[in-house]
Every structure is written in C-alpha cells, then in structure tokens.
Image 1 (cartoon, rainbow, N blue to C red):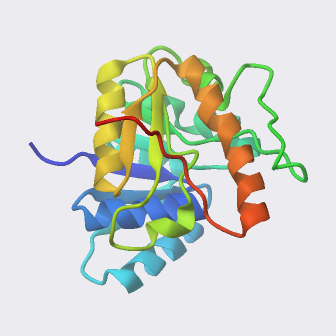
Image 2: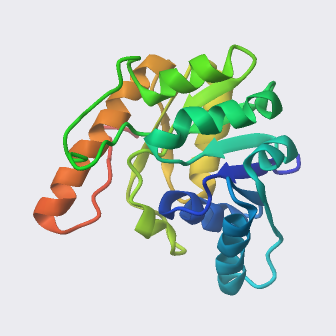
Length: 217
C-alpha cells in the first residue's frame, strides 16, 4: 500500500519542520502548509537544502489540507481555532493530528489547560464528527528530530477512533518514535499538561527531555 500524503499545517515551526524532515526521509509525500505561502516555501527550501532530491510541497493551509490524506496541525495555541476553521471543509473524512498545547506566555512552564478540557478536545469540537481527530507529539523534543536515529521519546496517542490512532502510531514509528495507544481524546489533557512539566525539567537540567513509558515489552 502506498504511503499516505501528509500535510503539516504549521510546518514552518520547530516541531512541524522536524516532523516533515523525518517523514520525508521515511519516504512519505509531505506538503508544508502555512498561513502565508511565502513562509511555506521558505520552510521547503530549508528541507530541500538538507535533502536536495526530496519532493516536498508548499501551499497555504487550506490548499495543503485539501491535498493530503492525513493533516497534521502544529501551530501555537493562540492560532489553533482559526487554523482549524480554515481547514475544516478540506479535512472532512480525514485524520487530523493535533499537536497543540495550551501554552500561554510568559508562564509556559505552568500547566494551563483550556476550559474545554484540552486542545485535542477543542480540535474535535471545531472540526466536527466528520473528522477523526488524534492528539499526539506534544512531548517530542523538536530539536532531536533533525537527526537520523531513533528519538528517545514515547508519543502518547489519544483519540476516539482506534484505527486512526493506529495510523498515527505508524507515523510516529516512521519518525523514529514509539507511539502508544493512550485512550480517547479526553486523555489528551494528560500529554498536553506534561509539556509544561517537561519545559520545567528542561530549564532546570538544561536538556531536551522527552517522555518514556516503562514496563512495556
């Protein structure tokens, strides 16, 4: 079976561009989406510099979502709702992977979950029942993605559709990460909250800490 076409909305940022790099290296067709086409093209140029022979697309957000099988949203919390509204029509019938965390400067090291419960729950509400929302990749140290080996980090994958979660676990594996089924979209609150905890640890120890679940075979 052919690999899915992935669009990374917000693929100009640290996490988005790192995931693009990993998935392109793994053989996926990747398109970078941005609110401004010029920024998507700049991010594509950065990736092409690292992988000259790679075929990487660059489109505005709505066009990128329409062009793909799986949409990955990697935008700051303040832009989450407007971004989801912009791609909602194009995303119907697809898997949308939401990586958003409710980080609110300047207190990003303090857990501040939204009143709705989690950013993942916001994504499912905004996109509607016609979209299979999966929440994942919040705890990945983005800088570690710009390499070739496995990343010492697990990915908690939550969502209401188990088959969709399984597809995202495959994407995690392709990026050198171990993805784990972590239950329904409501459980995304746990991985989102853990991001602020990891920021605190990173500042204390001057590291790029990730999350690892122990006791598994």
